[in-house]
Amino acid sequence: MKGSYILLIELPESTEIQVGRLGKINFQTGFYAYVGSALGGLEARIGRHLRKEKKLHWHIDHFLTLARIKEVYVGGGKECDIAKRMADYFDFIGGFGSSDCDCESHLFYDEDYEHLNEIVGKLCDRFEMP
Image (cartoon, rainbow, N blue to C red; front, side, top):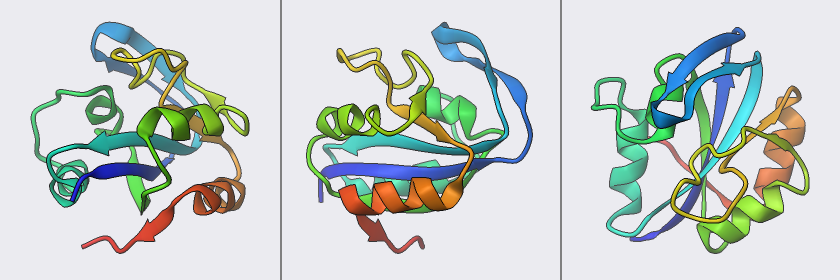
């Protein structure tokens, strides 16, 4: 199955992370939503994100070295359409995950997990993590 997904992620403490060519980024403690897509296999891509051992390829791989996925949502339309709707609700990390499109970002921040979860739940369907 192919499609879009949103990872809900918790970063337990503020930290600076080297994110590929974006450089060092200061992330604050809180909750993040990452919008991505998988054209070859949604389950395989989500499974890759959930693994701790992997080659650091995408921006999100660098972030997940210190953060933890709490929930996964799928569907909701095209990746960039979802990201643009998310930008209406949340602060974002400029350029994160959007080096191959014209979106401002694909990583969004909220200090309130319930608010983040509520909005994402309106955009996509919850995915049962393995």
